[in-house]
Length: 92
Image (tube, rainbow, N blue to C red; front, side):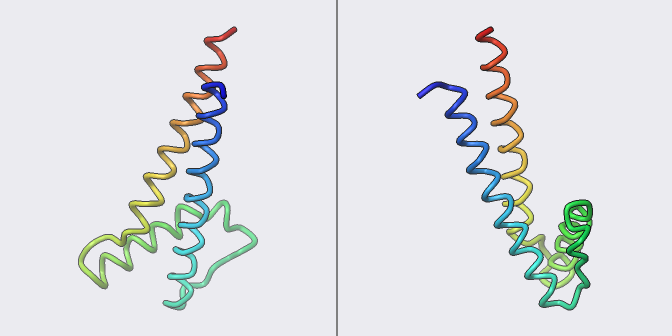
């Protein structure tokens, strides 16, 4: 298995974690009666994550764990994609 395939699989794995975590954040917000616009959800993703952060900070005094998982998986996903692209470019 080549290195770019390993990085691509890692990016896919982190993308799945990113999506599952976002779905759980949306579920959390719905339980607290936050109106979710499903038609524009991709464009409002940052808004909903920010609302989750604010609500958990207000309720518990600390930021919820889903926020950290979501941001970490996003960073690792982008890093994996960048690494895969660097490996592909360096092989040419």
